[in-house]
Each structure stands twice: as C-alpha cells, then as structure tokens.
Amino acid sequence: TVLPELLAALPEKPGAVVADKAYDTNAVLAAVAGQHAQAVIPPKANRIDQRAYDENLYADRNKVERFFGRLKEARGFATRYEKTATCFLAGAHLLAALDWLR
Image 1 (cartoon, rainbow, N blue to C red):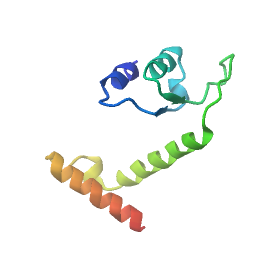
Image 2: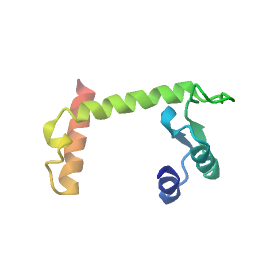
Image 3: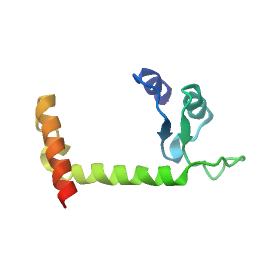
C-alpha cells in the first residue's frame, strides 16, 4: 500500500520497477504506469489476463536479494552496530568488496 507513495517520493523517475508477485495489484501497476516506468512484476497465477514481463530483468532481482543476504551474515552490519551513517556506509563498502573478492 506504500509503494505509490515511495515511487512519488523518488528524486528521479525509475526506468523499471522490479518486484515479486505480491505486488501484482492493479493499484501498484497503475502507480508504476503513472511514473512511466516498466513494471517487471510476474503476474499471479489467479490473474485472468497474464501479462508479459521481462524475465531476465526479474532474474537479476534474485541476485540482489542474495547479495543483501550475504551482507547480513556480518553481525555488525545486520544489527546496524555502527551508529553514524558514514561508518555504516564504510562497512557496507568493505563487505561488498570482500564479497566481490570471494
């Protein structure tokens, strides 16, 4: 229910909105269309008209989710141990670099 507000608050219009099946509602699709963005949301099985979506772009969503899962393996990052935004961002950069080297 908050997605239309989040899309409206973005400083730039997105090219595509990638989400899972839970976001396959008419209100969300209308909000994405209102932003002139591509909706990369697979249709639910019970939807009468099955829309087409970019399956390759949707597959990249899984890669992003797995990356954040690996970042959260670090206890300090997952519990937001660092109190300042600068230190937290530095930790995120360090963890991303370590993950890239893995």
